[in-house]
Structures are given as C-alpha cells and as structure tokens.
Amino acid sequence: MPETENTETITVIHSNDPLYTSTTDGPNTVKVDVPLSGTDNYTAWKCHMELALGTKRKAGFVTGSVKRNTTDPVLNEAWEHCNNLVKFWLINNVNNTIKSTIMYIPTAKDVWDYLHGRYSSSNGARKFQLSKSCYEAKQGT
Image (cartoon, rainbow, N blue to C red; front, top):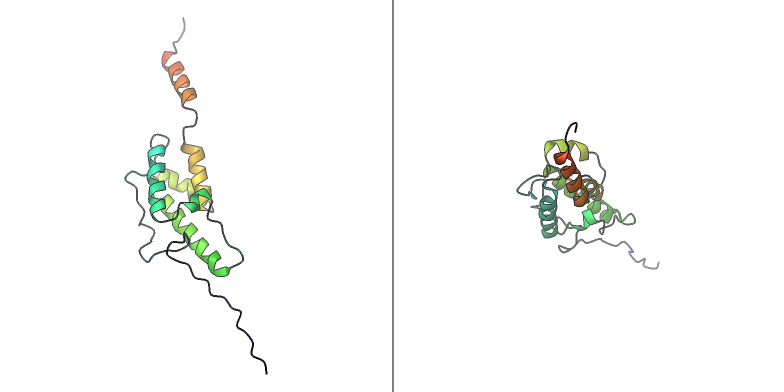
C-alpha cells in the first residue's frame, strides 16, 4: 500500500505579526492619560492612541491595513480576537457618553472612523467665522 503524505499545514503566528497577542495583552493594557471627551481633546487623544496601538503592533486594525483572513480558520479567529481587543482598548479610552455610542460598532476600524468623523475638527476656519459672528451679534440696531 502506498504511503500518503500529510498535507495538513499548521498556522504559526510570530511575535512580530499584528495578529500575535501576548499573555500581557488584556482589555486594560492600553490606557491614555485623558479619555476622549469630544472635539476639544480629539487630536491629542488620537495621537496618544496611535502611539499606544503602534507599540502593540495593532495600529493596522484601525487603519484597515490588517485584513481578515477568511481562508484560514486560525488566522480568521486571531483577527477576530485582535479586532475585539483593539475595539475594547478604544472603548476603554473614551468617556461614558461616547462609550455608549460606539459599543455596538462591529470593527475597530469602524469605531476609529466614526470617532474621526464625529470629533475631528476639519473646518477650523468655518468654526472660527461662526464663533466670531455669534460674538459680534447684536440685538436690534
């Protein structure tokens, strides 16, 4: 009887891979000094979160560069685990009001994009103009 070759492959996730998680990576391992509270501290919060996620090799989950692998069940499960971990880190670093608005967003990237769209001040000149108009407004003549 001829020998059959075992074609089963073993998936290995190395420590420099974004899908790798350490035993020390938990829901409370990424903390920034001040949680996101709104447009007033979004830019500083975003910078701190990018640094924190970068040190954990997880920034790709919010930029979208780390894609889900649907062909390998081990990599798919690892992606799901890491996505949930990053999402948890984001949720833990915003105030309670914001927390309730992002809790059910499905991916870390979607949470990141939502927060950027909601709290980044993309039109500073227009905000200044409106603030100035309000300040200068007078009643009557």
